[in-house]
Image (cartoon, rainbow, N blue to C red; front, side, top):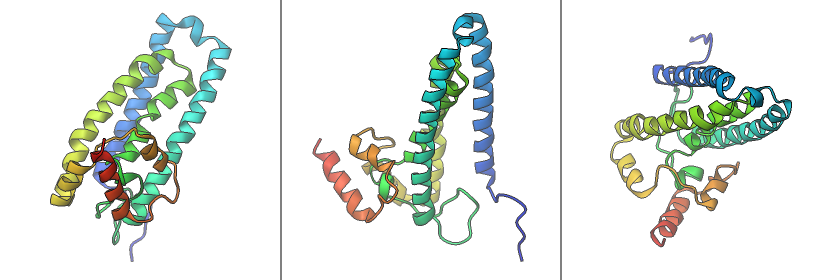
Length: 199
């Protein structure tokens, strides 16, 4: 009988979480250091911090909402058998995954901005967070895509040809916030393909 002493995460997931912590901690520290040099008045302004805190909490709630919707879709449709946490073994093309390949990552891309707003660092917000977001996009379009191709093979190659990595169309973005948006994956994917090809 297996006794669990903590989250059962794969090495790949652990490395990603560590990278996230490094990016956020390093970005926050560097941002405050730059603020002390270039934005000391703004950094000490309580109204600035109040406004950015409210905006950051709103954005953070949006990030968590997207992560919950996309995560539940993966948990319901992408896992067969006993797997480590945050791992899948079935290609998911339903719900938000019917119109973009990386909907969860699209939400997570906003996380550095949310943190920058919460701590009220203008340097983090204007300079460091966009650079971190760019680095994340590169990682998604290289490492994540490579792993998906290795795991799902021709099925993912066909999915990649038909569905973009990210999609900012309003109807697609609404699916990121829809709790029960994955009724019939094949029908959704077909509808998206038709709409995309007609543009």
